[in-house]
Image (cartoon, rainbow, N blue to C red; front, side, top):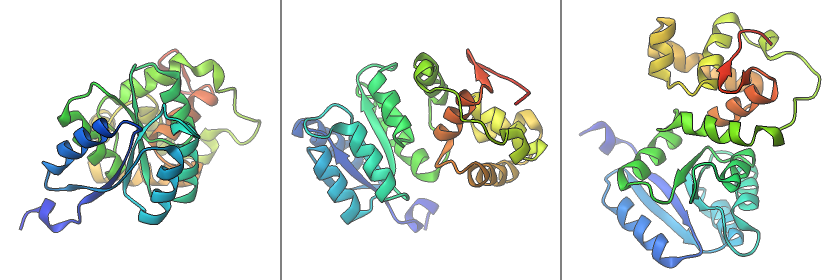
Length: 231
């Protein structure tokens, strides 16, 4: 039995006010062996209710919908069902709606024009808690709207909360590097990097890697695409 077959499938909730789009994404996911559609919703309100009832691994969320919309739905889902990850669908790669959705708790954004392979790859990596394909695009999105973040309130500097090695890993995440890229740069084993990432998330109270990138911008650790050594 393969590793994929031995694991339960990733359960996905599809959210879009266009039934045709939901059907198309459902057909894409149905062609995989390790992803299944747990349910579908056409409004933000229904998305929140179904997420609470079904507790899917991932919600594929359209951000522009009638009613409360995808941004508020994302906020409510990630608050009510912390174990569920949200991937937002957007039309443009620097869309302010995608940015606000990630501030609300989404773990990644994906263009509606993305290929089926990109869709399934993003769902798998988000479900696993890894860096999503195109992680640097997330950094570009945050940078494009960084003026709306505001500086972090006064408090302990991030560097005082992390060990020197954890801080190095944090800088790699802030730059959009994947775990293998960070491991190669720091000459460390991949399992060691994963352990550091989990510790960083716990120490900083961050829900995922995207939240860590946002923290890096808020604390001035990343400016104009550059990671600083201080702070």
